Image: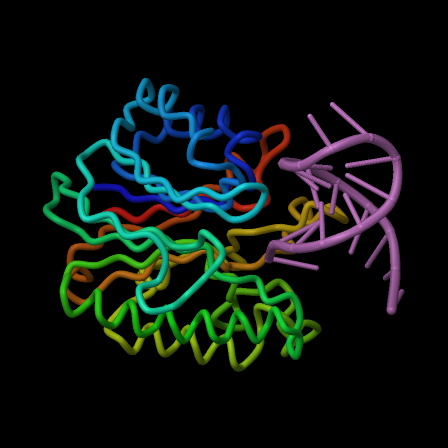
Length: 258
DNA sequence: ATGACGCATCGAATGCGA
């Protein structure tokens, strides 16, 4: 069973890329972030024709918005972080009844945070605290759990194209990395690092200054699997192919196979 | 310090992303 996370930077602008990519990569579930559309604008019809008949959507106008697209039934859909009041649509959870058994998916578009010391950074810290407690509770109820999405955190120096020049800047701060580590300590594993990976593997590249061409990127999109699933993980990889297409998202899809 | 690029917004300049 394959499960993918992809920040599409507007599903309206990227629908054709999603259709083209899933045609070549018919993953069981696709977790999207930054839909930038309201629920009524979600393209159910086109996705159903592509095989994704089961979609759990939590949209928002202009900003944010997340969804889980699935070939298999989804149930017990929960929007937002239980116990944390948030005006943004950033988290959606659902239980997937797939061929590999039942898996609880938590798909998140983590707060960017802009700059350490800013109000938005404070929001990011509070949001991460709320998420931590929510994931702790979900893990207790669902041992077979995957937390995935756009974390907006480069967990280690090797996850950044310039760890020295960008030390303690956004995505690289000790505080953000501590939060990432605390999520891991709940009983999760960074599936990407379970396997040998190419040097300088990233999942996001700036649109500007030829960021992709120069491989000036960050690995900020992650798939964390619970210990109950860890032994079943067969692979995890970034697919840079759609980043090379015309008008791409600035993020590439990351896929885990269990 | 700023901008570079892309997307969205009722129509142009601005907010936001990372």
